[in-house]
Amino acid sequence: MKWIPICLLVLVFLGCKSKPQAPDVSKIPVKLNVLRFEDAFFGLDTNHLEEGLNELERNYPGFAKDFLFNIMGTTPSTAVKDIKSFTNSYRLMYDSAKKNFSNFQPVTNQVELGLKYVKYYFPNYAVPTNLVTFIGPINSYGNIITTDALAVGLQLYMGRGYSLYQSDMGQQLYPLYLSRRFEQAYIPVNCMNNIIEDLYPNKSLGMALVDQLVETGKRQYVLDHLLPNFSDSLKLGYTQEQVEICNKNESNIWAFFIQNNLLYVTEPEITKEYMNEAPNTPALGSDFPGFIGRFVGWKMVQKYMDNHADIDLAKLMETPPRKIFEEAKYKPR
Image (cartoon, rainbow, N blue to C red):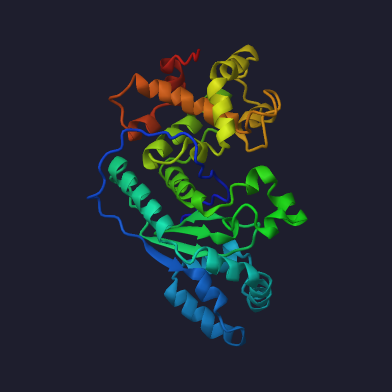
């Protein structure tokens, strides 16, 4: 079973929209079967766990074992004890999630539409047929792609103000710049990012910063086309104010990279300052978002594609990042 976990990614905002010319995908057949695994799991009779777990495996083949051993982290010898402890500890969250996610159809519709665009742009890709929801440990996976399913951990979508996120333990795991994203509106974006990663695993880690920028930008550009009606702030993972600051200072941001000779550095301790999640980018100032490289790479790829309208998304993803950088001639003013 293939696993591509993404615990945290971008959120929905009400800001400006990035709207590529969206094709008509209404006739592309995509239908997700929604499976509420958390209901079955928290409904287990802990006095008859062996029978319940066998039924769980029959109803959720493959995923039940993945949940127990990869998500929950139990072992065959400790499963009974661990399941009882986990369901007791997370019962209140389950009850809250049952209310928060009583109507999952709007999210399902958005994910299905994204998958239609996936089929349009990447017709040979076998899109998942199931969408499985679950509740796992707060420090475990929030989004997973398996052989035939997109799996969504509701424990990381309870709303940014959820009490567990605001606790000392919650903030140690997920500071505010991350936990502000824990809204169910992020689910379609995280799902599409999993699809993109499944299609084209990012292998740029360790390359020069310029290559990492472009590879990240390629993925952002594809995301724009899979979710054409979602806001830029959602897809970038910034607040709307941060998006506006980046747009207003695009030339200054680029000048910073050039003047500090950053494009060809490979040292991880330097590149991570621009390619990792963070509350801000200290070298630019506290108003600039962390992971500023996502914005820079996205703009580079936009410039490249403005001059290469004949290239489809599959060809873009297969184009070497250095070629894109050189031919884009990115020089914002």
